[in-house]
Length: 521
Image (cartoon, rainbow, N blue to C red; front, side):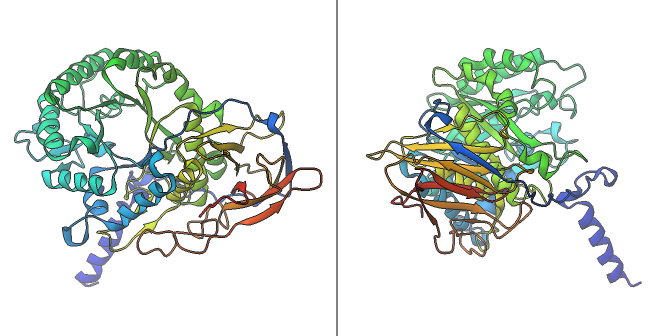
């Protein structure tokens, strides 16, 4: 075998070992995601009336949902061709969302996660604490200037994290002052996050054995005070980190939040539906059974009483599956359905900002675009787009149907009301995620003075579909610039003689029902 062929095979081997699906030792690589089951024969009819809804409405929604990136994404996803200007495809994908809500909200972004912990500011001259750390990402003034330019051009804001990897606060302070404040305009900063998942510090060797919650709390309060002093007269809001390990479900979490409540504007949570590193739990059935109120609310309920005096709750990071996601699930139509469902549930509970994990190196990426020359849109972006489509309007609120005994919680029905128009516009959004039910027929009295309605379908050929996803017949498949393509198609249904509308929803799809005269696209 000649050296060229040998080197070629070595390259293929290395490529396989270090691809996103093989980021762990080979013996620990999770198996492929099992295919979704076939559609069942059993169908279900649900009948609604005004009394079907709980009467509990969300506050008015100002959609502030976006994407959490890693530092390694900034140049590739925000920079223009050959390093000049900004990425027009990324700009358009953010503009799509803003156009759906006008002045009532805006997409946001976060630079966080592991790369924000393992970052190296180019201004550090003696960062010896990084010598034994793998996958360090260097952040330079040029990268920060690019991020600032993107935020200004798009009209968005960013959450930026200072690292707590070193227990010497001088490194965090230097990056904050000479990096963030020196290179990013204050109006482009939504908040500065302080640290990331500190209950993993000891496990990853970032702190010595025996590191305790009280040790961390003292570190945080000290660093927060120093950051405030360093900011001087510049107005900067701060975000407290989320826990991810043993402190998450213990009293530590609430004790920490109470202790720092007056020092931050945002408390953050990280929420993934499934543990992506698991070999057995990552299935379509398990994904589509979340979120249900008893699941997703358990993490948020203790935080809601703290959201007073201007303090907010942010979903700072999350997606279908942790550990960079899983091919065949995180990048499928099932993930799109999960995304819009999770965003609605979190909104209903009182979360104000949302950042879907979206690193282009992960299977749950929302899109990929290199220098703006090409763009590929992945299923989770469709879920984000659908959420903005539902919540547009400065006075929009939502209420969820009260399930009757025996009705599956995985069939979600939302009443959406936009009170910015006269008269207010009501619509119904039906999410069918029940594996064991085929077609669902929803019978409902119309919540508007009209005998006709139009149906906007959110659909694909199968839950495991990676393309062919449509919203009102339109898709991002084949887009070259980030614009949605295709003709807008809706269906018209008429009120029956008994005064009810009947809306059929295919297995594992979703449908929006609006008055006939409402423009949907």
